[in-house]
Length: 329
Image (cartoon, rainbow, N blue to C red; front, side):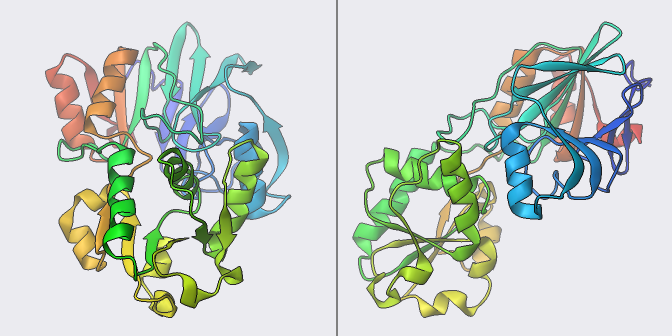
């Protein structure tokens, strides 16, 4: 048994803090939920009480409507509150706008639940803050040594070079609507790409929300306002689902690209007929996962959400007390 399982309990619907009587990122509606960030596999409507960063609340309102929770409580980064003898703090996770690690302090023990995170610079969100703790619960989405993400500047230079090489083709890039779309736009601007960037309607609301938080989304044009015949040599951002249907056939000789960490796997982009795979991820890669564990230096590591066995094995080989969180269910 873990030293921490007396008060932190993995359950099928999420991590449960017994003395605080709340869940972290629960998969079903509960009385009290702490939500690490706004992606749909972590943030859900229907909870009675939600604690999250102001940006995560704004994202949930945009996605689910104003009544996504009966009580909506905001907690900014590096602020704390005491709830039933459990001290709760939210720390930047570097994943997307508003994403947070959850720091819990109870009976002289400190536990951090990472949520999703990355360690790279991202102009659209606060960077990950490593804090020493006793228990670190980490995601492992890309928890295999094969996953080593290149710099985003290298990947986007492939895109801008393709525009030069194929000036008669519209470049349609599949991006997730929350986080990836806004990061790609901001990073292209940092590379001095100043042409209009055209947006599928599914991306517009969240791009507008980012601007409300001071994240510039410059010279973006709704695709509905464009003459599609004039999109040769231009960039169109669209959700990944748009790459799987005939929607892109309305674009002039569309060249399909996809921005995802999964583009490291050749079979993934061949299966989806992606001509230009862009390895751009908002999750930590193998080296960053291990760097983070070294930086935090916890007494114990629980690994979840991904390739757990490899990361657990490597942690143990370096002297950490590590286990897959599902073993504690």
